Image (cartoon, rainbow, N blue to C red):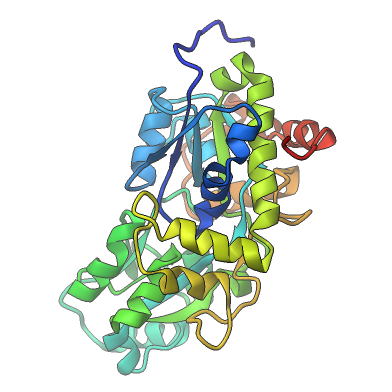
Length: 345
């Protein structure tokens, strides 16, 4: 249904959380790709996904960098005011890791099986607790997938705590949590600070899994459809750049600035350039541009819904009462944007 809501400004407020996987958005902004396409984009740095979710729901942002599952939660009103939105472009694949405390690793916990043995044989003062950034994020689903073969069930054998990504490392170091699944640079940061050890990478757990999406409100797409398509094209151009060596070096320099991650460049370079000096091992740890990555197709949507069901997030939800999956994952918008993709002048 066509929206009749009018926007009061030509500024596109694009929210992001400071993580390495916001690279294509940051590069598009800092290299002038948005401006070259006539877009007036204002990047809004947010502390975590709860803020991104709420600001999208209440119309304070037109577009967001967000976990792919958040589009479903917003459309179905799960934990937030129901807000029609969709994605026509997936920003990246992979990019996450599971990290546990150095002290637990030193005690012999190196995989889910050794953790399961510890749970059965040792009484804890408090339950083992793992952090995830959002219940509808792939981090949550990947953590459950990693634990499940060892018979470890969330909220039965361990607790799951939802924390902003930026607090993961400090909470691990303080002993408030025992591990987490999160994006970079917060796995590398824990290793270099001596508080954590990486046990698994998402590129190995679920290769090429969808990770973050460019989510926009349906109002914005209806009112400024061509503007939305131009935003997708600008970000796609930046994503292609982020698959080159020079582009990744540029991303390291940009993301280290205070408005983005504001950290030492080496922490960012570690996951963008897997190798001898990196804490991650997979050469495909971050994938920003690939024919199978950016398209929001039905297979990815169905995979996400299956993960949500496995996590128990849809037990009381009639998904058929909401929009069809093809109205949330907009493959048609992706095709429209890409069909007339030309370099910015």
